[in-house]
Image 1: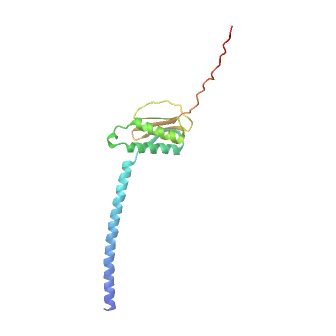
Image 2: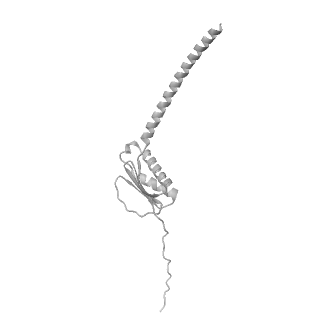
Length: 157
């Protein structure tokens, strides 16, 4: 085999391999593109519209409240999407915040309510997730002051 024939065969072999590699690269590119599109679609479905209405709370605590509320809303069965179980969500947020940040947290959840509350400094957030409104606040717990029992002496006359 002459040098020219070897060079031609080598060139043909390289071209065939390049075409195979290009096809494989194209196949992988389509696969990854499809995977990215599916991920974006799933993220958009799980994305919630959170809006802070009023707050006197550290950002980290607010984010914890947002995440907890969103997680609980997403964990509800699809049949309940239109009818939110407000009591269950309020109880879950209250218990979580009582456990993380101490007792005396209160939570009100609904689509329409009015309120006027007194809260501890740094312990108040009012926000909405889509059409659900959440009011989460902390009050101070003070021990009850019971009067000391008085011992009365009976006086004999």
